[in-house]
Length: 157
Image (cartoon, rainbow, N blue to C red; front, top):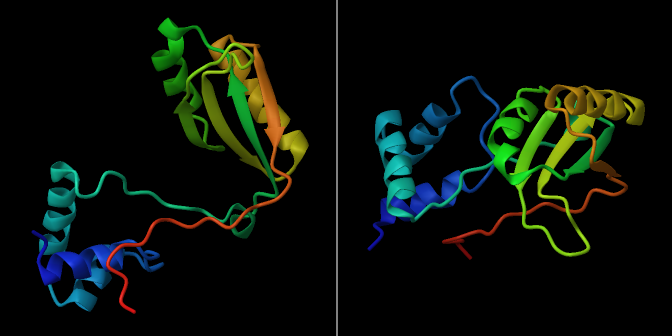
């Protein structure tokens, strides 16, 4: 059973993090608990499965990235782990996911690449392809950004 404090913590951490040097400290102060108590609760939620994922959404245009490309890669299964480690070492890669393939869709690894231009994306992708020795990929450019929202729990009406 979740306590009132648990629900308050969940309600608060599902919102934006404050843009300050110590965001968890500020959140803990808002909740009138210590930062250690907050971190302990977050770890407890994670280990118990109450919270399965803790993520962030970056507004790419606000940080100077105008072009975004989802790059879909066809990587031999036995190389996925090693190749993905190299891919995520590139600073302009924000996401790297393994996905199932289908008879008409052979791509099993997706990376999101951000740059100042399409040419910048292409340059980064070419560097990644050379580093991992994989040339079987497609670049899918972002044309529109849809509203990104996460599920909200314990919302106060």
